[in-house]
Amino acid sequence: MINVERLTKVFGTKRAVDGVSFTVERGEVLGFLGPNGAGKSTTMRMITGFIPPHSGRITVGGHDVVDNPIAAKRLVGYLPENAAAYTDMTVYGFLNFCAEIRGFTGDGRKKAVHRVVEMCFLENVLHQSVETLSKGYRHRTCFAQSIIHDPEVLIMDEPTDGLDPNQKHEVRNLIRRMGEKKAIIFSTHILEEVDAVCSRAIIIDRGRVVANGTPAELRRKSELAGAVTVRVAGMAGNALSQKLYNVSGVQRCVILQENPKAATVRVFPKAAPVNGEFARAVAGALSGAQVEELHSEEGRLDEVFRNITLPDTAKEVAK
Amino acid sequence: MTNIKTIAKRELAAYFTSPVAYVFIVIFLLLCGFFTFFVGQFFERGQASLSAPFFDWHPWFYLFLVPAVGMRLWAEERRVGTIELLLTMPITAWQAIVGKFLASWVFLGVALALTFPIVLSVNFLGSPDNGVIFAAYVGSWLMAGAYLAISSLTSAFTRNQVVSFIVAVVTCLFLILCGFGPVIQLLEGLGKPALVDLVASFSFITHFNGFQRGVLDSRDVIFFLSVIGFSLFTTGVILRGHRAG
Image (cartoon, rainbow over all chains, first blue to last red; front, top):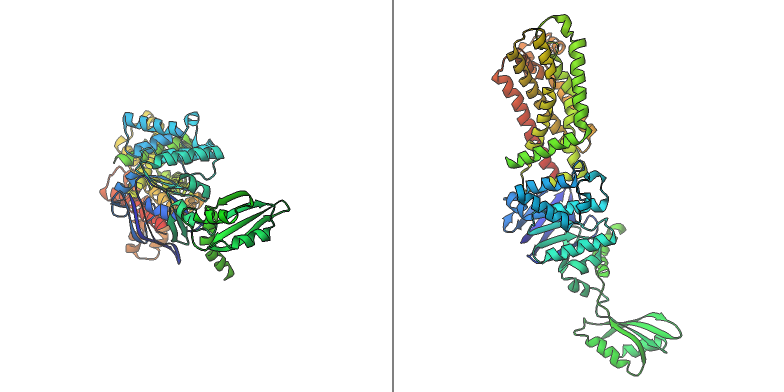
């Protein structure tokens, strides 16, 4: 549905987006991650046709966003970063306007507005001016606007920013549900969201795509991925590590916690393990010991995120 | 066309849900009344004509009032961020610009139409040439459109409505002054009639005078329409420039 090829955007001397390519198919929810100022919003604005790319090509549903913007924009629903809405209108007036401009007339328009009002729980504030809404309601109003025409492509810039935990949960559920039939891109700073919602994630840093894969694939890039953590009662940390170094394929052991009763050690494998063989080997080496806990680490997204994006930022600071 | 209508409708509704519309209309009507009857000495003149006591003031009222109406057109959209919403809808930027302009222009037309009691008064007191009055109204509305288009242009420059207002006032003042009597006399002192004509031909006042005499000269109409066209076109260029970064 969405095809982005070698997209570049230059602001003055800054390359805000630098050769970004990716595709999103129907039924995919793509999470857009990256530090602030990495080029996430700029990329999204280019896909929605708000700002023209410097070079590169974007097609939405086969329509080139630059050459055929109206056809492309018809397919897209967009939730901008600050969830802007016309403050001088009522919620109903605003949604009605959006439906009208999306080409709904008469009964169809009423139905379209009614549908999103129900989906986004806006009945209570329907005739209230947008200006007087709380942030959560305003956000939902803008969200309602983006799905009013049941678009095939949905682009959302930080859709859960500023919502309370319940609202976040609702929005995530909504995104996941809609993701079954649509192509969705959303940006976020919240990594748990990626796990909860995305079928794929892209990490952008300083205008470039630095990682692209399913959340599980990304987690595997983590140092922690595949490591095995064990807690054994009645053994000192050092003794336990000595014992574990004998297991084949062990790169290093780290003592996490040690007290007279028990010790916790994390064992890192040399190569990424397959099918839990490493965990079995560790368990084998400990036969006879009082194992209280043994589990394989999955890797953590925040660690991957930091590893990929931090070194560069740190380097810049050092300069 | 439907899109232009939709946008214009929204914009017009926005004027009337905010105090802007009412404040504007009340002040405009008060000014019109005050200047016509007291400063313009409508009664003392003893003429069944609206030209000198009423329409002569319009270029000066508009100088301050129209930029106040037009300053929010784009500055507000940019400040609040709704421009991002508007321009990612399946419409062209051109439709948005024309739609917003038309809404404000219609609004100014409504304010102007509400001065109708003065036409009734003059008809009650004497027998004026209503054709001349009609022509002057048309001219006044066209002139308001030209002011408005310039305000739309300055509004697109900035997020700040105050800056937009001031720049619009100064630009419009310039366009008034180049046809203003004292300025013309000053230029005539230079002894270059061609220069005087050139400068005066850019003035709102020069072109509005024809309408006041009851003449719907195509040159005057084209002047105002081309100011509107040029300003709206430039508005589009500026908006595109902002987005291109």
